[in-house]
Amino acid sequence: MPLPVPQSIIQRAIQELKIKDFSKATIREVVAIAGKIERETGLEFIHMEMGVPGLPPSPVGVEAEIAALRKGVASIYPVIDGLPELKQEASRFIKAFIDLDIAPEGCVPVVGSMQGTFTSFLVAGQCDAQRDTILFIDPGFPVQKQQAVVLGYRYESFDVYDFRGERLKEKLESYLAKGNIACIIYSNPNNPAWFCLNEQELQIIGDLATRYDAIVLEDLAYFAMDFRKDLGTPFQPPYQASVGKYTDNYLLLISGSKAFSYAGQRIGIVAMSDALYQRSYPGLTERYGGGTFGSVFIHRALYAISSGTAHSAQCALAAMFKAASDGDFPFLKEVKEYGRRARRLKAIFLKHGFEIVYDRDLDEAIADGFYFTVRYPGLSGGELMAALIPLGISAISLATTGSHQEGLRACTSFIKEHQYDLLDERLAAFVVHL
Ligand SMILES: Cc1ncc(COP(=O)(O)O)c(C=O)c1O
Image (cartoon, rainbow, N blue to C red; front, side, top):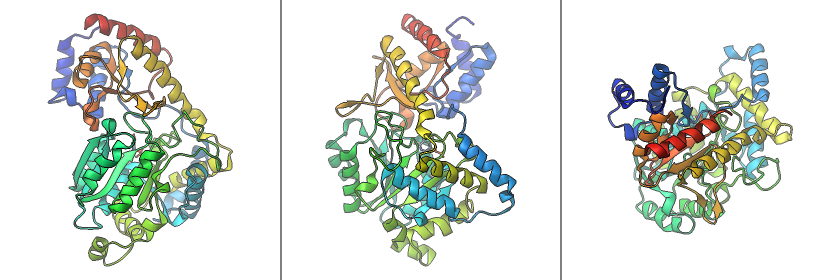
């Protein structure tokens, strides 16, 4: 197939998929367009749009799950709070790798972090009638805003690009001081930009969350994947940074999907601080007739949504947490592959005149990991996406992530060994066709 793919083929794909504004296409839409063009033309795409783990699942989890299924757990409803061994191991894992003390009671399995954020938004938004708004520290994971829309909640957001370090304080306070913020959410490392908020920034978030009584949802979907540091030795520093060091008003979302390549089984943990778990809120008392944040979360919200999390997947996560905390399962070793891929891919983009958009954590270059962001001088994110598609390169525009920067998010997870040369050739062609 000679490149570029003719515009007529691309336009037909866009029309058939009824995409109104291609520059704002969602991840699923970009996947659909790339797939359609691939089928029609036989062109191999370099897929960088989807954040799907590209590594095999952890055998520790798979074996534990098979054993559990063989024992017959499939016929038995799991306890809604979570299997005791999983709660215990989750609490121990958090101590081992974050150095935080959270009682097993507050560690609750969920059907992926997606269910974790949905339920957390739901309950946080019911605590106090005055606090009806979710604050996103953007850029972020677009589907979480979709969750807010599904729930009918208001949200506000800001792009943290210009507000790193000390500058975060004033910006964050300008939202919290209004008194309507129920909860604050961010991911660390960040999807899509892979920056990592540092201790100073987490302290600012924690202090302000306490002062203005907002609940922090710390999304650790890419747990310990800041590969600049060795975060993989249990019970030894350095640890995964967390807002939990600076406030009691927090819950953590720990996903099995990326760190353990276990996305298909939809399993993760919401870990609430002991103080948050035990706290009563007027809005919850009025709606449910009593209960604490933790008990309402589990016995009202989760019960109503899914009545727990698949039994065997809980056994898998318990086994993975245990092996990791015992020091028998160096879970970060496998996923470091994403960092190696990012390093190679970034070098190719830079060689062809691209720039990394979110390139620094204050005085430090950002880590190499699951995602990175690129721009090309003079092109908007939408224009760049549209220019790369005919060359068989797919990525999503930063505009869909709440970023105010022009550029693309590239995901390293689907890259195959032979595609580095392919990318090099195609980006050379991109510069020629520009
Ligand atoms: C920031 C972030 N949060 C949550 C998730 C979803 O995690 P899970 O698969 O556990 O639902 C993702 C997945 O891409 C993510 O990037």
